[in-house]
Image (cartoon, rainbow, N blue to C red; front, side, top):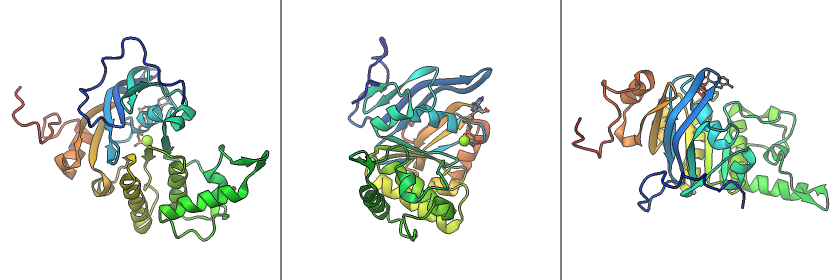
Amino acid sequence: MTEVNEAPKGASSGGDGVDGSEPLLKLRGIDKHFGPVQALYGVNLDLPAGQVTGLCGDNGAGKSVLTSCIAGARQPDHGQIYFDGRPVHIRSTRDAAALGIETVYQDLALADNLDIVQNMFLGRELLSHGLLNEDSMELQAGETLSTLHVTTVRSIRQPVASLSGGQRQAVAVARAVMWNSKLVLLDEPTAALGVVQTQQVLELIVRLRDRGLAVMVISHNLNDVFEVADRIAVLYLGRMVAEGSAADFDRQSVVEYMTTGSSSGRPFEPAGSAGGEG
Ligand SMILES: Nc1ncnc2c1ncn2[C@@H]1O[C@H](COP(=O)(O)OP(=O)(O)OP(=O)(O)O)[C@@H](O)[C@H]1O
Ligand SMILES: [Mg+2]
């Protein structure tokens, strides 16, 4: 498929015991710095298929940097990424796309002057005899939007500039899932949205999960996180301080992890791990 799948020598012992429920994506020991700023310290994270993982953290905690490392937009300094149980190097967004990893960025990055179809196929246009295959692209774009139950858009030939915030977000999500993606990363998908539009995007996220995709959602809105997340992970100043089933958290504990790195003064302890001593 791609040449990204070679394990570096000596990395073969990485990862957890294989227990049959290997997460689709595993990060182990991811470090990333920018000059003097250490953005990520030894970050571990699991993103299982068929589950929504909510990634929480205060401004500057490292959520977007972590996302960009998974998306291939940035390279970690150290650490290993495993995809489907195999060590991979994601050196570009093209590598990520080849694995089935798609990202909806915080700033959306849609081209306002282009219509919905053009945006969904931007950089990956379908050609037929050297010409743009407009019919096929229109058909596929329409099908993707309708399987995601995106019904409020009047015409897929509308320029994106004329869409509402929620509709733009829906187009960005649809663009991400149109390419047989297995993992979708969403950075603040509801930040600019009203109540109704937020609800539509959350429903879209649940549909992706129900289609068996692994989904990672970054949000400052804990209502959104608790509504859709099966798992929660919290970054604090570049460190992963808590990760587990959403049932192991409540709003207060997430806020404590986000703002202090611990909850009631203690590091994260999953509910199932009773009796840990020390
Ligand atoms: N290109 C860069 N150069 C230098 N420092 C950077 C760069 N990108 C991010 N950082 C730093 O890395 C840290 C993490 O930033 P990041 O954007 O991941 O935060 P975030 O958790 O996404 O925050 P927010 O919630 O505000 O989006 C911050 O201290 C930030 O200043
Ligand atoms: Mg960010």
